[in-house]
Length: 60
Image (tube, rainbow, N blue to C red):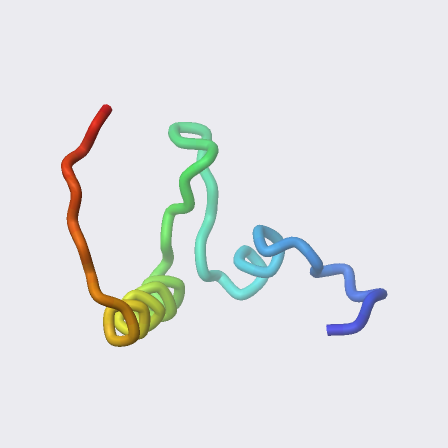
């Protein structure tokens, strides 16, 4: 991507590629679209393959 590209923000890129959207009911949380979930799951699979997964207690 060049410096003069209008799509510099990940939120704009995600919308342009139809990966996710945002809604007023949860403004900070992405609503994943099918293609976005494919990427999300592949990244999750990769992270689990290269790292030891741990689980801790929720403290909130």
